[in-house]
Length: 166
Image 1 (cartoon, rainbow, N blue to C red):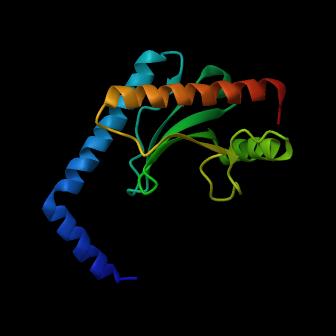
Image 2: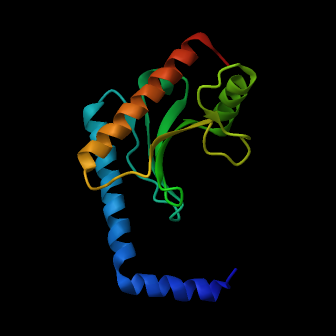
């Protein structure tokens, strides 16, 4: 493992090439367009006004279909930089809500999606891979893939919550 200074020198070299800035800018533009797409196509959903850019670890925006919003839950569309994939996360509006629903799912026999191992320090209750190794060469097709997988996830969560209460 290198020193902080060695990492900074490598970072500086990569920045001088210019490719990282272009890729990062393109990725952020795509995620902004994806957020706008959800906002325009699903006006009944509450879509967050901002995007969390992260520390090159994750970038996400959240939205809440009415049935989830009424339960103080939301869906985050997350791009994990190192894993290089899009995920959907079920999350609570606060830690108390998140803990309550995490416990409910943990204590049930529902195993359709990946429950985070511990709520401590977690940003999600359930994580689901929407698109692994996305192809950005056709952004419309990628958006459709993300949308279709996210809607399946939302419908499954909604169906589960319709018969389970924390």
